[in-house]
Every structure is written in C-alpha cells, then in structure tokens.
Length: 128
Image (cartoon, rainbow, N blue to C red; front, side):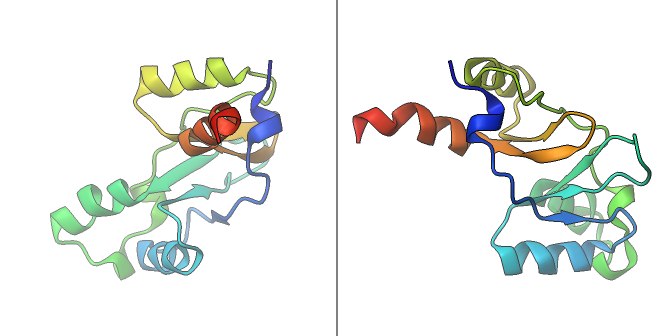
C-alpha cells in the first residue's frame, strides 16, 4: 500500500505570511500554480495555504487591492495536513471528507505537498 510520502511533490513553492496577495499572485502565475503553501511564522507553528479561491472570494470580491492585503489575512490556517505515512486511500478519504484537493505533507516540518492529481496519477498508472 503506497503512502503519501511516496507520491507527494517534495519541491514545494512557499510564501511568507507577511507577503502581499499581489506578490503571491505573481508567484502563482510565474510557477503556474493554483495555490501556495504559507510558511510557518515560527518553528513549531502550523503551515497555511493560500488558494486562488482565497484571492477571488476574500480579496477581489470585496474590492480590496491585492497590493494592500497580506497573505496572513486571507489564507487558511491551520489547514488540513497529511502525515507522510498515511496511505493513499486515507488521503483520498480525507480529501473527500473535507472537500479539498491539495494538502501539505507535514511531520514536524513541511516535507511536501500531495494533490488529488497525484492520487489519480498514481492509481491510474496501470491503465495507461
């Protein structure tokens, strides 16, 4: 049975919670991402996540200027975290229960990110 750590992406793009939403959007666009993991403010703190939905519903829909809004004020924190030893099936169940499609993989520190696409890619390889 495969685990989250076996299929996660370990090269994670992160941003500081003190960055502006404009900086985050620029980074998301440059890296072709729909979300960013937000670095913990201090050791032992939980990670957060900023999604394009956060930008749309919490910034743009309010008419706020992305240059004047900091990531910390609109990100989801704490966010659902995945233990690296969870099975792929457990992660899929977690995603379904919380209606999410991506989560940081954390065990004391950020190890990677796992997405619904990772799960689909891994479970469908044999049909290719």
